[in-house]
Length: 321
Length: 273
Image (cartoon, rainbow over all chains, first blue to last red; front, side):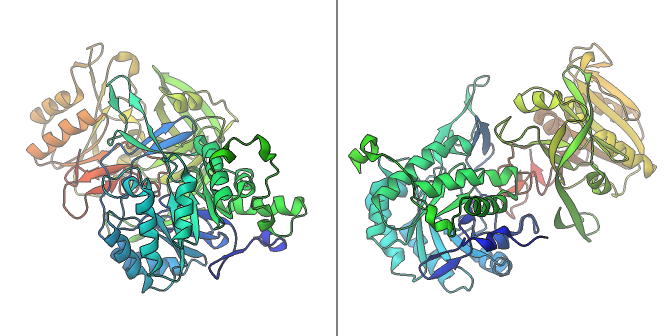
């Protein structure tokens, strides 16, 4: 195999002293624990893997139907089905450590205490580069969105977890609020190192023959290319409001999409839904970024971050920031 | 090429499943019954390792040109380097697929999932299919013939226009409207056959609508017959990443199994349909 193209361009970046080899990650819940298909894709060529959300106890997840395809997107209501943090540590982490990429542990919980317990337990393990905190799952009754749409609760979770770790703390924000920038500001002030923008948008689909919702939980989370313009605007909004790095997420399907997110202000990107269609797409995007940089005479991909050329006097967004 | 390591469910041996993701050339695509298409494409990699009951996940057009997600299809038959799919053209994805012309390509991921357990101890294989649920059975029939099993096949359709019988053996037909064969559903036809025939040790292989599989599960339980079913699941990835296709387990070890990874073929005693 030819040497990775990215060698000629600086692709890496650093977050809280940890270097990530490039700016492309696979998003939580779209790549299992990295072992679903062992040689699915050469993950050592990614910036990192964000694990499926981990809770204290295993969660069975929601009953079927959990997935509906919609125009250029999909609705899901998985309900944080996961093996629990203990099994993760015993069965998955030893394998993940050997993959040659950074592991970001995603944590979901239904109480502040549970977030703290899961993080504290993971803190004792080797091989975790950072934590991403899911305060924004739209598909569970307790926790999930009820935390992520409450500004003071989001701040409180951030502050509590900050005390427990010196590793990078990334808060994954929901777009299902009026101003996502307010949430970004509070987590920044409570010591978060970065934010992930965005989690899924609440959506719904109905079977007109049976008059029943297509998803067992009635509503679910919309993802895929359909949400990319929304995600991009949210990244832009957050980038205008905070100084901490942003992981841009939402419908990224190509290197061009990833570049748009970088220009809007994301430091790195996470590829989600598209992993389901092309399991190797994240590596293709990482390669495509390097090719773009080389073709445009860019020596460091970081130079693209926030490099949007916009005439802000026409920006409607500015008025609420 | 991807390698999946799994345990053979019958022998407990560790086997390597070779999964490929590739653009494959379509050889032909013809309407063989009402809205039912037989699509044939070339993939020596898939034919080399595919087993009856496994499926492939097909993208009929590049991203932006068609539906976003792949569509899962049972492998209907393999012949030389050719893989055959049987499907109903009823939605955007399947209609697009049905319009494929020879020489055009489709993006294929597979073979996926767990096959039928053909090595179990039985003399007669009883195949029960409802509608397009017939899809995995030409391949299974081929495999059972090599094992010299007696095969009896029961197929149920809405009407005579939908009937597919090619590459099946000892076929018993039921139609809902009585336009051909037994007038009624395929499970009734199957049960009446069971009552009047001595078959030795049997094993049921079934695929079809949920309501049919439910009835069959009941029947198998009542008569303590071994029954394996191939399920359909709403899934995105087909390889266990999305967790989108749960089916409830009958045991309490964990609540759900994934249709794509632990199935699509399950023993009816292992799950709740």
